[in-house]
Length: 238
Image (tube, rainbow, N blue to C red; front, side, top):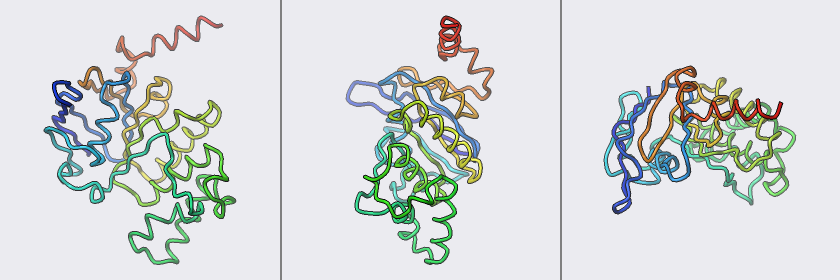
């Protein structure tokens, strides 16, 4: 279990996060919705070690991570901008984290090729990022994060910049790979339909305060989940 307790963050007199608490079973995904400025990205950056909270704890199976430096948390933050190494091939981008961890070359090559096959990039391993489409670059970004088997993956609207067709394919890919690798993740999105597709459990951030729902039924019942509006929209165009 991953447990987040009483995470608070203020910028001056502005409250960004107010004693946020949530738990995520290992191997599952919690979708997190909220309006712009509700604190979603700030929460992810705190968990990744990119920002410091004013208070709170972040516990992974009994180990406190909140005071550990980012590089020692084994927690990966992904945004919608795939920050790949432009001078490296797809193969080398995927292999980077394993090389840093000094994995033997034969094992490294096997893992990279296996993952490249799973994410549909085996034919593109010799290409550089500028030779790829936006969806392919995001696949590399995702694969590079998964291959090091992190404790947790933090996804900050990772597919928001993709067209609808590519976005759907990336959602399917994420679900497939996350199940194979038993990834534990917190998936931030502003799209209620994407939240329902990606999450096993759900949360809504409102003005820095988080409400959690551990079943789809409970989430759908919430007046501000956005589900009713989504349903009414599709009914209106029939």
